[in-house]
Image 1 (cartoon, rainbow, N blue to C red):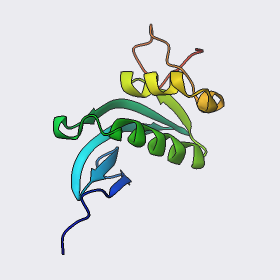
Image 2 (image 1 turned 90 degrees about the vertical axis):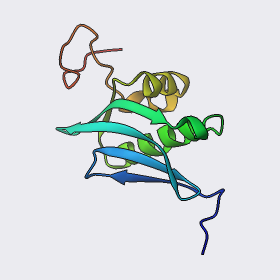
Image 3 (image 1 turned 120 degrees about the vertical axis):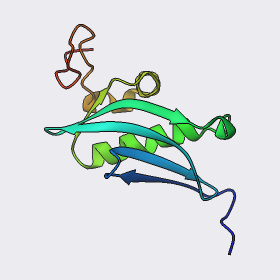
Length: 112
């Protein structure tokens, strides 16, 4: 049986500390994170070149953030892609702690 080439799925791969997006049965990208004391710190997002232009990055960000909020965890964006996504989606504002750019430790966020 062949995998549906249009099927897209986002899964939380806790063993690898990342949300993964699968498209047509192939790993298309991921959003890496670290979990600390009620917060998910998003550190890096990547979509494979061959999957670009399909909106998979936005789908991945949306699903990862929704799952983080559903768990009652705070979102801490260190990754530029997640940061840009959040700035375009104010519906997440009450769930975000913006990191202090002067801080060496992104687990110690400050205000926006």
